[in-house]
Amino acid sequence: SQQGEEDPQALSIQEGENATMNCSYKTSINNLQWYRQNSGRGLVHLILIRSNEREKHSGRLRVTLDTSKKSSSLLITASRAADTASYFCATDRGSTLGRLYFGRGTQLTVWP
Amino acid sequence: DAMVIQNPRYQVTQFGKPVTLSCSQTLNHNVMYWYQQKSSQAPKLLFHYYDKDFNNEADTPDNFQSRRPNTSFCFLDIRSPGLGDAAMYLCATSRGGGPFEKLFFGSGTQLSVL
Image (cartoon, rainbow over all chains, first blue to last red; front, side, top):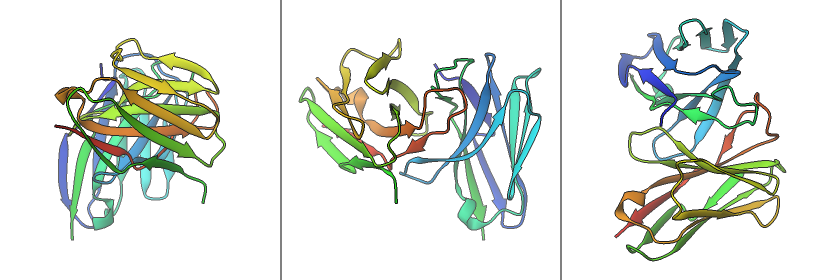
């Protein structure tokens, strides 16, 4: 079964706009991670946020985590056409064993 | 560059004909994972190895098996592929098995079953 659900399932924006994707999950967690996947390729790690953190930044990425609502958001500022990809959140379901369980993902399309 | 390599990139097999997918890594990571990803779906964890310690997910079909002969290589064996096994298979590694490890993925093998 899936751990998380991202929404929206698809998002289409113009270059320069901000993109916000949300992720909800069902269990306790130690950390939540966001990954990016270009079409037909493997996933690439973007950012990790621990359960005791509320916000984290990395370049144009901003991630928030609300453990009381069991939700996270990924904000990409000033989007570029090269940001077009699928974005997945993943959690460890509270396990300390390093396994990650992924959501269905958000397909982001950024138009030039 | 250190990386995770999956071969082949595309694999076609026949219904019921055993198939093996390969993964190698030059990262010297302790943990290797296999995920199955069907079109527009979440990557689904099948199993993982912490060193040589094999860990199966409860809902992974018996039709799927894995081998890790050494640190660098891991194989996914599908004993009798069905049409429902057509998917992208992703290999990933992590340095350790703790809760804050990030995963490094290969480019995947797209499996078709005819």
